[in-house]
Image 1 (cartoon, each protein chain N blue to C red):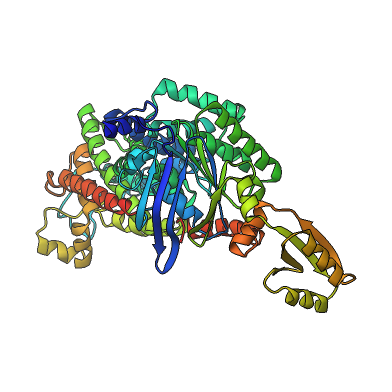
Image 2 (tube, each protein chain N blue to C red):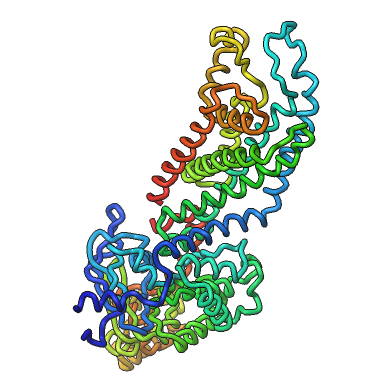
Length: 329
Length: 285
């Protein structure tokens, strides 16, 4: 008999190049059934490329990938029965109604009529769009559209749900609500979720976080474990003047990272923070100590601050629109 | 044993398989194209106003001048009024416009991301393309049939047999042209570019298809070239739509300028050829 711990998604040594740029460099990982798995990384890290390979719309240069035991590279049509995808960019037909979009999906995935109707009604209830069933999609807000896309991805009872930056462009309230719905969906069915995001606070609720940068996996563990192994206390300081700023930067060159008007120190503990305070007392305008967070994990692994990248995503979505929908460069 | 065990596990939820699934998917893609067209008022207005202009205004306006003593000497008289003569051509024009325009949805899908939704579905590309083209064909066929409602004004009486034969030919024309539209749309990335290009393709093809003036079949090749400039005669003869229009004339007013067998053959070849090119292109998307 097959053991219980068969991974739902398994990737081995996946490499992908675009010309001379290496998008993915020998990436391997496994996702267990019913896990909420997050891919975290700045833009250009290779998250979307990886997702596109798993969604069968991109072929890797080398490596293997299976979903629920089906090889996505050699048997893409079969593999697609098992996956539901919510792309970073909207992919609804906004001239059709909510119901028509879902029904289209069900028909294309070969869901029998009675089952299709039942599932659509059930999913619409779950994502609170039942009242909008016969409205044209173009009349929906962007948060509702996202929820509809998630519902759509599950009409064919996908085993694995891929969410590529599902909360980009949504306001805080819609973001919270979206996650609430994802949690609700996971309670009602067996569902493995793979999500990419660069909103670090959204990672906390995930079972496992995989940190990826420049096409390589840097860490892959539960959020708490990541924080205890790679986490770092951070000290953020705003200096009173330029001279003080420069002096502080040069005092601990290997620990200091400049971020706008701030200096971020990788602190080794409370003693370090105290010595900093003592040394530069009177020349510090703002001083704060941050306990280990996923953000500091990211900083210590990559040497970069994830927040620097936040503006880039919207820009990339905009660029995508301008390019006419062709995906990743 | 383990191998088959794995395969069973991977089957997943009970889904339709084989032909039923293919037909379901084909129907979904077809239905979407048709629904989108039905909801697009502009397209419908164009489909209605175009034949009205061509048949009621151009047709009636030019009607008295068609059988007269043009250039003094009449060598050849077509036993039809001008209205009757251009009526099948207007059907072809309406189909041309609607077919090529329906391919805009290909650009739309790419631009607004819906293409991805289709591409990650278990439908093979062939089925997706066929569904899209059949959808466009249906809409174009409908717009072509709208013109038939004007048959009374053109003094054409249609038998059931004529209509069936005509609809068959119209289907072939619409299918070929929708495929051509998809081929063009795959090469052009913007809506604006497509509009300009499709007009630049449709109107010249229409005007040089002997749609609004006949080439005198009683003349020899040499004589024709004396009456008409040689370049025009060559364009008319090389234009495949000349034979499409001729086939429709054969069906609706029983008049052929060329060999009656030629039209249906050209239509069928165009439908297959353009579809194959569209399919080849679509596999690369």
